[in-house]
Amino acid sequence: MATAVSMVKQGLMSKRQAAKTYGVPRTNLLDKVAGRVPEERTSPGTKPVLTSAEETVLVDYLKLMASIGYPVSREELLLEVKKILDIDGHSNLFKNNKPGKDWFYSFKKRHPDVSERTAMNLGHQRAIVNLAMVEGWYAGLYEYLKSEVQDYENLVKDPRRIFNADESGFPLCFKTGKVLASKGASHVYNVTTSNKQQITVMVCFNVFDDYLPPLIVYPGQCFRDTGLADFPQAMYGHSVNGWMDGELFVAWLQQFESYVTEKQISKPVL
Image (cartoon, rainbow, N blue to C red; front, side):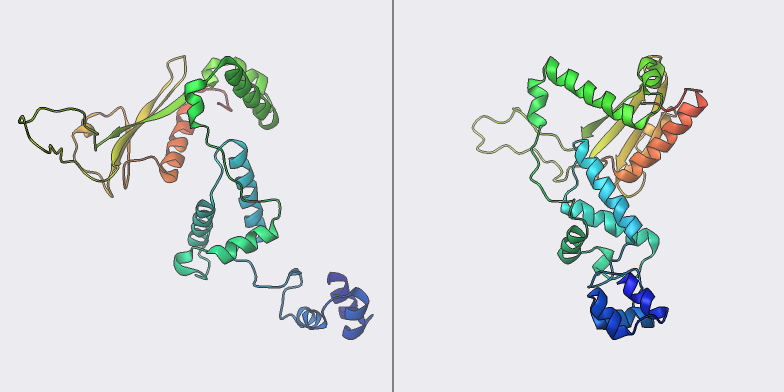
């Protein structure tokens, strides 16, 4: 099509002759020559809402997440696209800027190297962990670092550059065990909230006692006076249910980067 358009614009062929010679639809050729359709669009159908560069980033993201054991579902992908459309200010082509199944199937057609698979859950392996699994995990980690970090050998030999980060959730709705009650009572109830709210604490440190102030995540749309504000050696955040979310984690990573810089720890760190 690009060659046919070029031949017509240079006056070397008529539109009919170019369409026949290069085997392209004459109506599409007429639209491109007249400027009604961008020349770079070579596939029929509705123009994608994302640029080719944005879709390439999405595809790379999907492949990366799958490779590290956190594959993205269809719903999560559609929510990621919604975030892009919201931030970039694209015209609202979908309800609430969230695409549906038609966009998803078109996206898969444009990127045949992306497919839906049934993931195998590995949670039970926590209970059957063995030496071979641990060694295999570290072998995979070293291969990844080798491909991503230029001086990975110095990184893995420097314990000050290796941090351990973990979050713990403190549920606000507890499951109860046996309780004391009147003998013969047919039913005993424990009144609790019906949601899954919790307070989350994120901690991070290395073996040299470089300790990032913990991040405490409250549930709710805004902060409330809980008494913990008297603990100044901490960072605070909030989410609807008190769980860590993407926005909070990115903010935490920014604080972590500032902490590493302040402590003059060589980068990159793990």
